[in-house]
Structures are given as structure tokens and as C-alpha cells.
Image 1 (cartoon, rainbow over the protein chains, first blue to last red):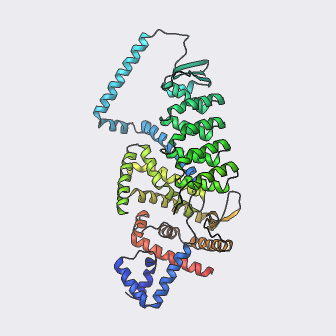
Image 2 (image 1 turned 135 degrees about the vertical axis):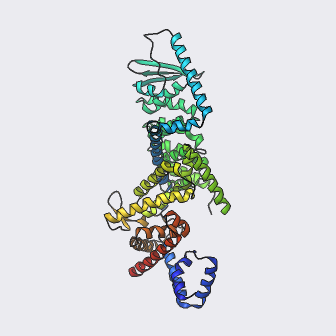
Image 3 (image 1 turned 30 degrees about the horizontal axis):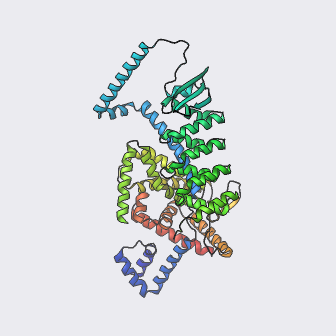
Length: 312
Length: 199
């Protein structure tokens, strides 16, 4: 090992990239050669100086915001992929079925039985020319509704009454677990101009938070609904999920940081308390405790951070 | 540590297989494991939160669209970093063409700020004089980094700031360990020269 080799490889030594055997010889040489020792010192110095420019760490709120945007983009991509598969690659769908003959047989049997059942019902049902048309699918529900005017629930049962308009006002009645009732509730949460209706629909939807579609609708209400009462209701419904569902946690964190209503922010902080030890949540709470303009929020954040264990 | 790594690789492999079969939750879980590192890398390389966010989104969308073609020839970590580093290299090249990059950037209000000004200093012994010197040094470092080629910048970033092994860096950049080594050598030489000139 000569001085030229040592000088050419000193940067590898400084960055711990020399294999053990070469490292030993390298150190032996440097111990007895002042010029090479100087070179190693210079490179280690460079490493230290360059570390004076620390890594820019993305703040938790920036990370949460990025995640939300990515989530939206992924949802669009998922929809596109689904449509493309059907429109442009139907053979791929069929080819996946051909390897599952049992599944294909089941689908055919269910389809046949369903078709026969529907035909039987239509044949049995007297035609009522004055009766309201019954929307049967999500697409037809959304397409035919011009607005929802009222939602009421029987306090003693699960029965819900929804008044909605198509070309003429219509009413749907059914159990809260009824798929059509759920579609109408989600539609109301997203689209109704009437705050009372949105409040009711979010309140009722909150009884079905195990359903991911309902949870997504609640997240959207929490982020975008203009009425703080509706946002509070959505927040209450999502509260139990902050631990298990990271997307819920991100939305609640976003609301804590950016909502313009002190009450909503305060409840968001309370909701996050069980996960306050999470590094993102902790950092934001510490930031709020030090900097928030709202004195009550600042105090609440201080009280929560004071209960957290120190990090070594 | 090695046990943990291999366990994480097994977990990743399971998640990738599920994602390949159309399980969106599995893909989201994969994102969760690496997205913070990806965002950090993009932020440090571009110096701009907006650009970093664009790269972060584009990288994971690309990964989502092509996860079906993932052949398990490398780890998911290497694969996603390869996508991000390519996007960052494109970005750096475009920026180099547009203008000479500066460590001093403009914020959304048109005000000038240094990259280091955006990094909070929450050390207990906060000293304004030392802070000023640190910022000045940061500016010099930023300027020195602009004198590297995009590839030298990338290798230096991955080695110095991300602490990756040269072999992994070679894999990520679709090149050999030897080439990554030579690139790092040139980068350190240039940085030494630049910083000594600025003294």
C-alpha cells in the first residue's frame, strides 16, 4: 500500500466504505505517514463541514398534506385503471376468469338466478302508472336526484325517512342498513345545500363507520363542509378510528392545523390525544404549544404535551 | 438488525404480491413505509417543497401503475428510490438548463430565502452568532453543491445525507459500484476545491 493508493482511497475510508482488510492496512500506513494523515484529516473535515447543512426534514403537516394529495391522485388512478380494464382490456378480465372455472360457473348461476327472479317479479307486479320510480343503483340515484329536502329518523327504530326531489318530490323509506338509504345519505352529505340535511345525514352515516365508503364520506365532510357543526359531527364519528386508520389520523391532524374554527380544532386535538405519542402528532402538538395564535389551543396543546414521556 | 431487514423484505414481498392482485390497501401500506424518506430525499435535492411534493406524487403514481411489472429482482426500497432518483435527476437537469441553480431561492411571495433558513434550529443552546455563521456556511455549501454535475450531486446526496452503501447507490442508479465510487471521488474533490476557494 503506497501513498498514491491511500490518497485515492481516503474518501472511501472517510465514508466507511473500505473493506476490513484494506482498512487495517490503510490505518497502519496513515499512522506512520504524516502526508497521508493530513489527507485523511482533510476528508474527514469535509464530511463534517458538509454535515453543517442538515437534512431538511419534511414537517408532519407537509407530510400529511402530501399524503392527502397522493391519496386523491391514487383514487383517480384506481378509477381510471378499473375503466380501462373494462374498456380496453376485456380479454384480460376474461382470461383471469378462465383460470377460475368454478368462480365463472358461480357468477353465471347467480346471474341466471338473479335475471329469472327479476323477470318473475316484473311479471307479478301490477303496473302502477302513478307510482314513484324507484332508483335501484348508485348511478341512477345520483343521476335522478335534484336535491334532498328532509331527513328524519324514528327515534325508537332504525327506520329513516328521506324526502328528495327528482323532477317531482319523492320520498324513500327504509332501514338504516338498506343500501339505497345509505346511498341517499352519502349523497346528502356530499351535495345538499341545506345544512340541517347535511348534519342529519352525517349524524346517521356515523352509525355505519365500519363501511369504508361511509368513512371516506365523513372524511370529506370533515375537510370540506363549510358548516362547523357538520364538521364536528363528522369528527366525532371518525374519532374512534384515529388509532387504527392512518388516513383518518392524517385528516384529523390536517383539521387541527388548518381548520378556521377553534371548537373544531379543539375537538380534533382531543381526538388525537390517544395517539399523541405518534411522532407526527407529537411534533405538531409541540409546535402548537409554542406558536399557535389561539391561546386556548396553545394551552390545550401544552397540557397534552406535558403528559407525554420524554424522548431520549 | 439484519433479521429485521429480512423480515421487512418478506413483509414487503407479501404486500407487493397483494398490491399486484389489486389490493389498494396493501399498496397504501407500502407507501406508508417509505414515503417519508422519499419526500425527504426529494425535498433535499430540489430545495423546493412544491417540486418535492410533485416528485413524491409522480414517483408513487408510477410505482402504482407499474407494480404489476415488479419482478422481485431488487427490494421495493431500491425500486422506489430508483424511480425517485430518476425523477430528481430529470428535475435537476431541467433546472440546470433553465438557470444556474442557487442556494438562495425565492418563496411564493418573491422574497429571497436560503435553504438553511427553512430548517428549524431547536437546539437548546441557541446562539444567534453561531446561527449566522451556520447560515453563511450553509450558503457556501449550497453553492458548492451546484458545481457538481447532476449525477455527482445525486451520488453525494445518497452517500453523505442518506447514508447508503455505494453498492446500493449503484443499483439505484442502474450502474456499477465502481462507477458510483468514481463519481463520489469526483464529487468530494470538487467540493473540497469549491469550499477552499470560498474561504
